Length: 584
Image (tube, rainbow, N blue to C red; front, side, top):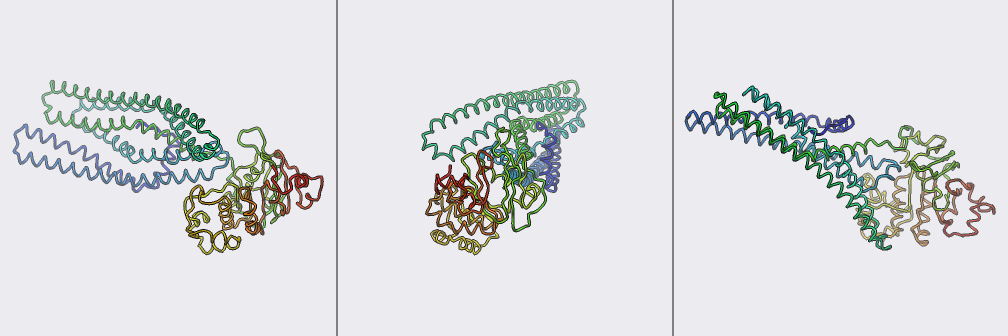
């Protein structure tokens, strides 16, 4: 009653509810049955009182009482069934919402994740959906049955006594109008509180993840001070929210007391002027009014939850309706086994930043050739890889794959043709098998072992105490940086990509380990178009081509051998100045 869904919110709710329409229809039938029992059973109280006043036999009074007790038991059984159906449907719906939100977060482009922290996403996917779960499992059931119950009680009181019917109707309408208007009071502060809460959760998540650096650089005091400032801001917002909700709840309680007082006064006046109203009739009307107050009190008690739900629905809609900056309209599929890549006058900037990370970048990589990508920090190397993987799209120019703009390909199938090994490897709590296959059940242990053998990583695999069942910690704390990279190489080989991007893939590996996995890298690059982003010149010395970026522009691009033997080239100068050391 207090939550008004706009068109987008209604469409959001309807889409999930419609898939469970059979269970919802059954629930609606039980709701009607429950209301009928609530309306019918008090008639036995009236009959009992009037019969007792008339001096009827004890056996008749006992029969009436037993009938009333039986109807009450039946109503409780109906309520249990209603709660079971509601709980079952609610869990199915909210789990589907969580899955959809999670899927959206995984698929959104780089610009989205640059504005929203992982902690904020956790709060939206778990916290907001949890509030929706409470709404659907508790108040949604009450809201439907309560509104129907109010209508039925007013109709019945009209039937019992016309004058009292008008009184109760006027009071009900007044109460609902007042409570509905009060229900909107404070919704903005609740949305602000939820946003501040999500921001605080994100802050905690990032600081705990970076705890080692915080300790190493003695930043505990600053971190705690920043956390205190966020808590202080959150407290102010929560205090304002609580104050407004308190006003709403207390106003509702006063309104309900007023409804009961006016009803009792009206019945008293009618009884004085209309002796035909029996004690049983007066008690029956009073009983119906107490039933009427139950849904109204429930609505008052649920006002704050409703406002939280309203804000949660807005935030979930924002998340689901976000329009990414990556074009997903393409439908073509990349079928060719050999892939050529062309950057055609590509320029790119992040979001509304006026600084161009890449400016008019043009080069072409023939199919099944390798390119070493060099450049100082901030020159745009990783951005170039992100554009190729279509984590974002260029504002100007085009990236052509076998002569076709990459935006014309279906996004999922296009990304499936690209494998990336980066310097930062994400590991997940689970077995070595799960971390290699990324939880794909169709990949057998034999396939994994064959790939490990082809990559020349058998010595490393034999060092694992429990083989593929070896337990991997979430943060990879029980593995060295080199072992994490080996897992990444195996993952990529399982995907069998046609384009391979090595983004500082060996930057965290010591030279001895790097030489050990050179065979794995060579096997990975065979018959694939590869881009190797590196700081070490030694990492790209055997590539077919070398691309040097400088401040977002192409400084030079040519065959690696030609550049190495050209004394005027930047690549040749790097070799003379740094040998095989880092170029930074």
